[in-house]
Amino acid sequence: MANEAAYRLDEVRANIAKACKPSRRETDDVTLIAVSKTHPAEKITPLLEAGHRVFGENRVQEAQEKWPALREAYPDVELHLIGQLQSNKADEAVALFDCIHGLDRPSLLKALAKAMDKAGKRVPCFIQVNIGEEEQKGGCAIADLPALIEQAKAAEIPILGLMCIPPFDIEPAPFFAYLFKLAADNGLDQLSMGMSGDYETAVMLGSTHVRVGTALFGERRKQGQ
Image 1 (tube, one colour):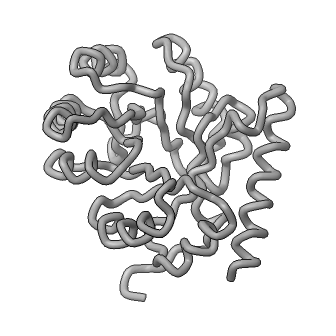
Image 2 (cartoon, one colour; image 1 turned 120 degrees about the vertical axis):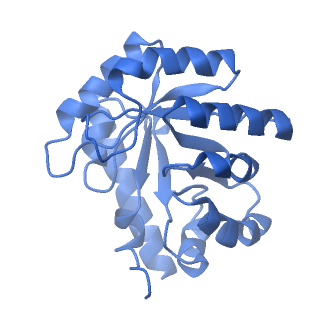
């Protein structure tokens, strides 16, 4: 398992490096977030042993179950929350995560600001944009983005950049390019975009954080398995 994890990690890193070349970007400009959601600690440890330190979870409760023990063994881990966050989980998220990718609405912003004030720390965030304007998907409406950025500034929540999940089964490049433009228009220079199926395209279009699960861990476990 350790050898397979190292091989997968090297392959993804090599693909990122290759995708950086056309725009003359440095590989270090791209943060690889290993998305460990649904995967048990025994599948995460080989990547840790291979030297990787940035991981992503999409549920607060699952992260609470897995990561305290792993972080005790590997205290330099950086943990990102990449899934939608309920406002009533803001305190737990601020306590556990080093970065939050799903800030998408004023009510969550208020909850996070309150939690950060209480904890005496500021957790950097990405604002998730509903880039495909899909009714069923989370994310700030494009038209509401400037106002949410201003509200975050007023609440002293550090905004790193923008995050998106393009519509499924549609060429993602135009959506990545649009997010790049939205970030530039709003004075932001970091972009959380790209997953296992499209992270190379995302890197070529300016992504600074790619969220890769399947390419590193294999297929996710289904609930009940």
